Image (tube, rainbow, N blue to C red; front, side, top):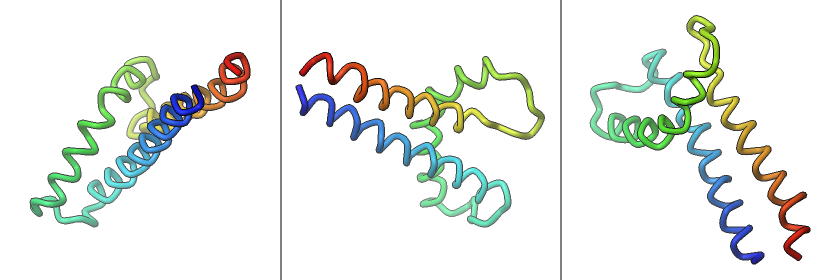
Length: 96
């Protein structure tokens, strides 16, 4: 059972870094730091968008419009943090 908990925790940790990478990439793209015509940049952006948008879209639908400020990645990171903490502090001791 420990292996299952560690695998889920690792997957959530990797997804956390993908969310952070997507937020940083969106800032770099918005401020024209990266070349938007570069094929590699486009592929990275497409991957990050496709990996994070299914989880961010429902959060964006619930949050109020804050103008140009998108806090949905922060909300998603808080949800992931809650799931990881709940998993290790509540569920795992019940399984042992």
